Image 1 (cartoon, rainbow, N blue to C red):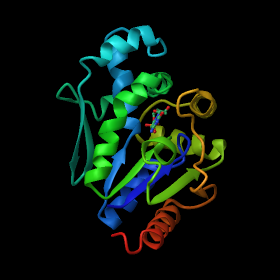
Image 2 (cartoon, rainbow, N blue to C red; image 1 turned 60 degrees about the vertical axis):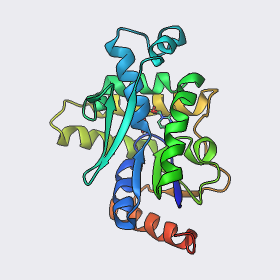
Image 3 (spheres, rainbow, N blue to C red; image 1 turned 120 degrees about the vertical axis):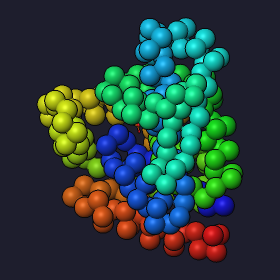
Length: 224
Ligand code: DC
């Protein structure tokens, strides 16, 4: 099996790149951020504070999260309910960032991610895939871009969805999440030593997708 670990900060284009590259390679695209978002959403819905382990840990006991893969991509279920759209609200982003700092939450989600990589050729996108989840991944890529560019992409995405958005607020949120994600004690965001650093500032999405596909093919030659 070939495992591609695709890590990087929020808004670097990981999800879109991973989804398209997976399609071209015939691999499964696993969006691991969705798992943390589902945990965050559940905590919010149950009235808990996502930053407080005292609130979050008891909820884990009956937090059944599962993934399904369709021709259209990944769907995520929380106790059987499809929450694939619900987890995209901004409150769920901040809640995901908060719960992801709790070590027990990371452990809770670890086996599900590893199991998928054991059984499928995967492109898994996240923050700690190359460093913690799949340290033996055959291919590791760290995708990044300047914060201003990542904020601009998110801002345009929100406008395209018809949402109200303010660029400065989006930039502030991107920077706050970067800080949280790279300064937490549990599995902080950093590039694995053996990961290819791919800076997408100024590149087109198509250019990035093709570069990732080419890199995967080159690195995994013989393993497929
Ligand atoms: O990629 P995303 O925006 O959907 O991720 C949501 C949050 O989950 C993000 O703030 C960091 C966290 N996350 C993580 O800690 N580890 C991962 N493998 C994926 C996401």
